[in-house]
Image (cartoon, rainbow, N blue to C red; front, side):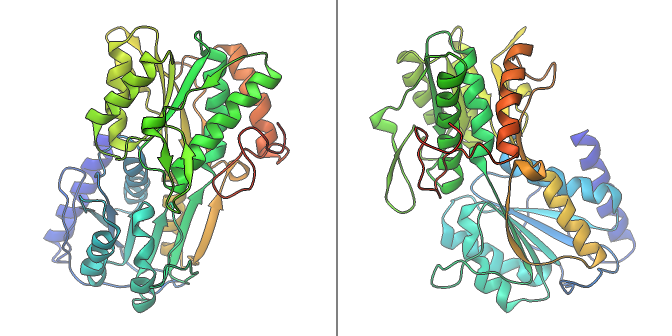
Length: 390
């Protein structure tokens, strides 16, 4: 399906060039930083197609996880709006200053710019100076030149309650573990990653208290995380979202420590975690952001137990449709289970959970949806050992 959508995107671009519109767009295999000038006003209906750029760093739209899910939302929109085009733009260093510069360099060339990741927070000033360009910012609200969060009429930022994604898979890990030891592996201790970690630990503790498990979350001091404010958050962090080799090293260290379930939320670096599990015996991985079951194929077996879901594609597509209809509004939105924006994979054939395990996870997750369980997060004063609903 993804290849089919990409073909549709390419066809739309070719037709656009033949019609003399002069637009320049790309696909997941061709990432550019250029385009022709066109702009639309936020809050008014967009006549004709949108020129969209998706800017990622340090990995591109083929990372099989975070960036790719956002890109899929754009492709889905273009499938129904063939007069719109998309250009993937990749900043490869992950440096926040470089990320903002890339956006500044292309801002005059697009109607809508979608920025993936915490490192793009500093686009606030660019957005303010370009009110006719609409921005969708994923995982971080925009900030001004002083680093303060701001709300702008042409920026829709979506952050997610990743702790609500981590919580059900933490229960899954505890229920599935045979050794009584599980672990989380993040990329960098950004707030979204710490949320995943704390939610996972909250879920393990919930299973221990309510479902009779006795499972430990292993945290190796040599890989412990430090968040963006300099606080020690524990867990296990690779230090990169693209270094698969180090991902494998961290995973092997945790496997050697007795862990048989590894929850990885480290972007492209997760490939190394999956490889370590495939080379070991009796070790499961839990994917993140999207359904990563296909990444777990290991001969006739599969190492993916389930995946934590952060529903970015549908929310991105919704905002692109809002731009088209003229109902787009700037907002710093925090999305969670109450809007079906967080969850986990329980579909038969896409996970390896038993019916009983799914029943128990769903029972607990329904309480997350109604607010009676509030897993610990980086932004709360609670901890995985002490949170509402435990």
